[in-house]
Image 1 (cartoon, rainbow, N blue to C red):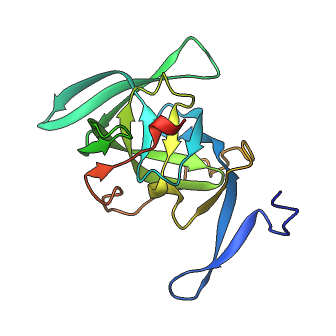
Image 2 (cartoon, one colour; image 1 turned 60 degrees about the vertical axis):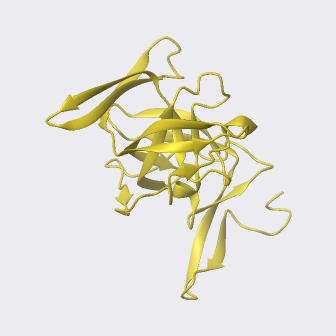
Amino acid sequence: MVAALGVSATAPVRAAEDAPVSLRILGFVEHVRILESPPLRVKARLDTGARTSSLTARNPVTIQRNGVEWIAFEVDDPDDGVEAVRYQLPVERYVRIKRHDGSHQRRPVVRMHFCLADVALVREVSLIDRSELMYPMLIGRNFLAGRILVDASDSLTTDPACPADGGARENGKNDSGDEHDDDGDEAE
């Protein structure tokens, strides 16, 4: 459909300073590579209605290390089907997620390195058990904004192809904007 409209895989747009910027056009579901050790490729839903990204986190355990709260959690390896990958990361903060039914949920937030298409970034991600949802990861506006357009009629258009070192960039600010976030999980 994109080709039928005469639009290329990257769409030129104008930034606030009138400098041309190219945005990647991706489908509503894409493969994402988690660049933490060990790296892992998972399917993610790209959701422009969600401020922050979220990742499935099974068996979470918080621990203290030198006065800093860390969280250990597992993510199922979709290519293995039996094994899970375990990560341990410092907790950046907690976010209060407003659900579609009006209830709220408190989730830990960690910073992780991700690669989507050829875009590698360090971004905050909230952790929640997404095993009942269709995709283990949701990519929100904190990753998409200014980089990626979502074509809701397409999916799985590309594989993660970031440099070997990840090349992830960090913006150094709180990605979510505020403590009330609606991550759209109910719409899957």
